[in-house]
Length: 267
Image (cartoon, rainbow, N blue to C red; front, side, top):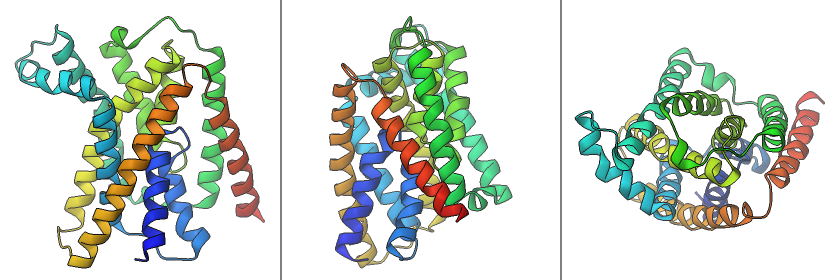
């Protein structure tokens, strides 16, 4: 693959993976806009690895707490913060894994990869994010995360398998609906992305048959590195802006892009 295409792919994935604007929707649109073939599963795995590294590094303190809490979680001791976080992240990941298996088994996932679907989800879920962000209360923080909330947010996250929805966007929407403040909503959404990206990346990796050529490995290394850098910068920017700015700028972008895509799709 051409170097400029690799860089563009990695930048789009890295920037949009954690911003509430849908990385999958943008990656589906990319080959349509450039008139090229789909980038394929190997590069999807690579950019997933890059973004995974970025979110782990940024939230390393939380990740470390959860990882060291896994042994106690496995024996049912979840009262302490570490085991509790690990347990709730695992529970929150179950809906998206089950829904993903269902979509793959039925072939519905391929049917939804259209400009019309992305246009409607960009528009609809963008408005939903704005509504919940404006109307939601701010009575909860990350320390208030409960089993019930983890299940509900996990169900919201599963909806993100519909292209154009945005995994981070829909999870933040769910968190704001439950009363979490903006920063806590984003933090929980980002932490929930770690096991989700691990699951989806692992599935894609196995689906490729682990059959890589030297050129493919080089392309993947470039894509993963660029995705890591762009994702880390996007994360830092969003978390900093949330201290003074709402999610409205992302909503405006989603609405404009959604309208443009619907015009293209239906004309």
